[in-house]
Image (cartoon, rainbow, N blue to C red; front, side, top):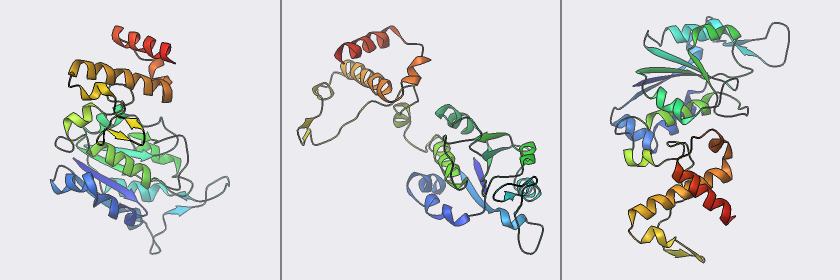
Length: 239
């Protein structure tokens, strides 16, 4: 997979691309990432990339001709073009799974008050990482890259991926490691008894409990199995 990022702030990616799992993925050549400075595609010697909006309004807008030029010169017919924007449905794990199957992705990082609306003619989709406003699209682009690359084959342990939050539509169950007891809190006995059937059932129950507590909306649209219904009833009786 190749990911290209169009940004006004290339330096923001230096630490991100040279740390932890992302660095290992790039070292293994499982993916290629190129960070492009949008200013390089300006049409004047002062490298202007923005201008005042028609009709008035605060701030500046990035110019459509500059950004489109950067897209054209860094993409192919196979490239899936993404614009980071708060005006989109919030990113979900299923979106990352879908995007991880693309051969080439180009991510445009908006800045200032955004980009001339006509840029939408040249993108395939917009992505938001949440219902809030950031100063630019660089951090959302890193979220996208991290979420996509870790799904690539050999990027991260497949067993780890299977047990993560949202992969089965529920939040992840609580997990523990040594010491067995700390500050008066013990690791649940069921996790120590070696009975894998009991452990599986306990973890499912805890995942349902965590989801009910933090993201009840996920349960509203879920088609519950008979086991899940029984466990939710148990949880209700315990409250």
